[in-house]
Each structure stands twice: as C-alpha cells, then as structure tokens.
Length: 234
Ligand SMILES: Nc1ncnc2c1ncn2[C@@H]1O[C@H](COP(=O)(O)OP(=O)(O)OP(=O)(O)O)[C@@H](O)[C@H]1O
Ligand SMILES: [Mg+2]
Image (cartoon, rainbow, N blue to C red; front, side, top):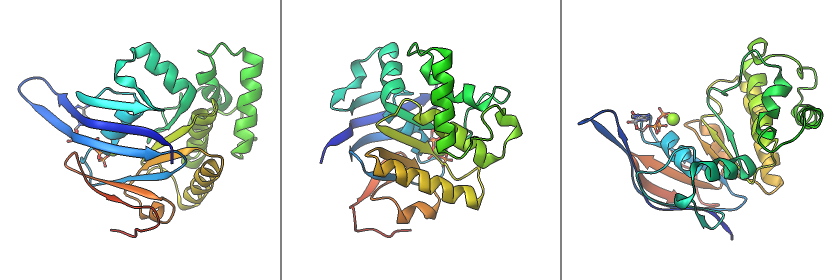
C-alpha cells in the first residue's frame, strides 16, 4: 500500500481578530493510501472542510506537517503549492466555484492556462472532457443556464482536466438532485477504477456503501478510523 497523504500533528486555528480564535483542527494524524475511496464524516462545524483545505494545500495548517506524495509540503512556497495542485490535485467545491457567464468549456480549460496550453488545444481537451461527462450539448453554455447537476459536472470536468492523482470533493451531494447523485457516484467509481484516490467530505449516507476508509471528525479531532471492508456506521 502506497501512502499518498499523511499528516502529522496538524492544528488549524482561525484568528477572527483577537482575542477570539477558533481551534478548528487538533493534532490530526492521518494516513491515506493511494487509490482508496475515503470518506470524511462528522457533524457540522467539526472541521471537515478545514481538513480538506489543508490536505489539498489550499490552506496552510497553523502547526504540524503535511506530506503529499511523500514530500513535506510545509516547506513549499505558495507558488510551489499551486503548481503541485495544478498538476496533481482535482478539487470539486460545494458551490462549484464556476464563472457563471463564461462558456462551460472555458471554465473547464482554466487550469490549462498556467501550463501554457494554447487556446485551440485547451478547447479540444475541454470538449473531450465535457463529452466524457455527457455534457457534449452544453459546451458553449454558461453555467448560469444549467441545472445543479450539470454545473457540478462542469466543475468535475475542470477538476479532472489535468488528470490529477487525487480528487477531493466537499459535500458533493448537497446541491444536486437524486439522479445527479447517481451520476456523481458513477463518475467517482470510474475515477477510482482508473487508479485515482478519492476523498469526499459528506454527511450523506449514500457514500457509506462506496467508501473503503472513513475518518470521523468531532470538534476538530479525529475520533475514529474504520478499517477497509469492516464498516457500516451511523
Ligand atoms: N475562515 C474561517 N474563519 C474563522 N473560523 C472558521 C473559518 N472557517 C471555518 N471556521 C470555523 O472552524 C470550525 C470548522 O469549520 P469547517 O467549515 O471546517 O466545518 P465542517 O465540518 O466543514 O462543517 P459543515 O459540515 O457545516 O460544512 C467551525 O467552528 C467554523 O466556524
Ligand atoms: Mg464543510
């Protein structure tokens, strides 16, 4: 088993102006293996989004270390971190974070710009990705004219355009309907079949049947780790 993400004594404190501070993560030690489907659970406010943000390097921990692909990324500069994300991590945000008026393909092609890919090739690759996600009829449509499920598939296409090793999704079922949830599960299982590591933060019990590893967060602490093949839980 190859470790793809490891954290060591990670703390995250949000300073909302002194003296009020929120300790969102306490001494998080976790290990995630390559090609696992990982579920992050816990009540609202327990720190799931914060944990996803720090392991995806969008945000830095206040204390502790994060190892991605065997490297201590605490030492990376902000530019180094964004390069790493661009190449190896695909993020699907709860609210999709799309530009509502730009055509779907342009939204999808954004991560290719810093890599120096020219427009024609950007469009070609975006169209291919959107077609794989059954959005071939929405290539030039802006997200503001799409359903929630379609918008999410545009966001997924954007997350996958650089062929990342790790795909992370924060509460991916909260803004889509039942049919789109099924589609999403199909896409995630397909990615797992291709060797990707999937990390989902969600309350939705629908993921319990799909995930192999589960982390439970409570008040910023990891309280339990279930083993592969051995869980059915609350
Ligand atoms: N930017 C921020 N500034 C200050 N406090 C924050 C910030 N983001 C989150 N928090 C606080 O940190 C704690 C953890 O928040 P987080 O968003 O990680 O929880 P969550 O488990 O994702 O919750 P939910 O299930 O509601 O999405 C909460 O107490 C929250 O109020
Ligand atoms: Mg959250």
